[in-house]
Image 1: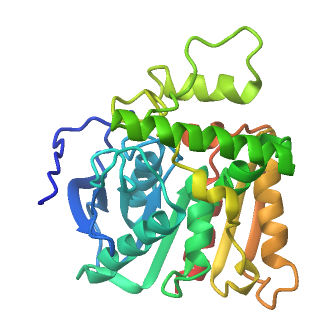
Image 2 (image 1 turned 30 degrees about the horizontal axis):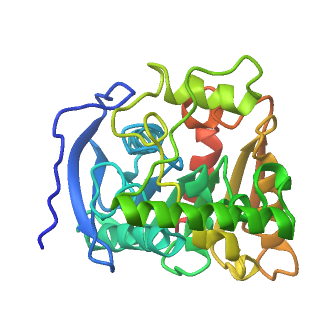
Length: 329
């Protein structure tokens, strides 16, 4: 059965359009046959072939939010960029909806690289990727296997496999906690099979309880207000399928990250609740590695997790650009 893709042509981003770039919608397929939809941002004035970036995230967002803002910013700085919706989300294809898979999502990044390399106005030797939040983790996982990528930027990252297995802040890192989680997930499988549809977990909680932790306040301020709300965003609305992360409980991403030869910069806010995940991922990447010289961890003072979604005075665009141009040769 042919996949039906509905694409919105008018500008519907949560940020204003720059007059310095050309913009259009594009599509490409991944190796699983899923059609991905992306926004392409191209500088209006350039000569020769361009360095290129594929960008996605945050986890549960759409390309009209943070990834699009990053993509437009780097197009203004001379890169050809695409911000894509992952499989099963946004305008991209894939059924059932609102599912995720570390295997398919890494393939999403790789198929974006395939597409960029195929373009006549792109320098195929200057390809990079940027992942934000949970997609920072997927970007790092992609860097472990895709040697075509010259530089990877991991921004305010989540390790979704660690969250699935250990809970937030590793507070459920026990055999009993994981067992109870498995029981709940499998009970949900029974229910979903009976009803014929996948129950959704709900997006960011709204309204916020008075005692909501800081990181939930940050999510609410982005996803549930004019600042970042989008009608296609999972986090802004009804969230992922409850079952979506089941298989991630039993895996760990980044297993061979200390073998990555290409350049990687991990950027994290000093006050981000997710800071420990980025810091640990960096240490594991450089531990016993022969390829430390092109790896960098950048801490942004006073920045929270969601500050690096869209706060342009805190996202270190200048330092990221410098890093990319140094290693995308």
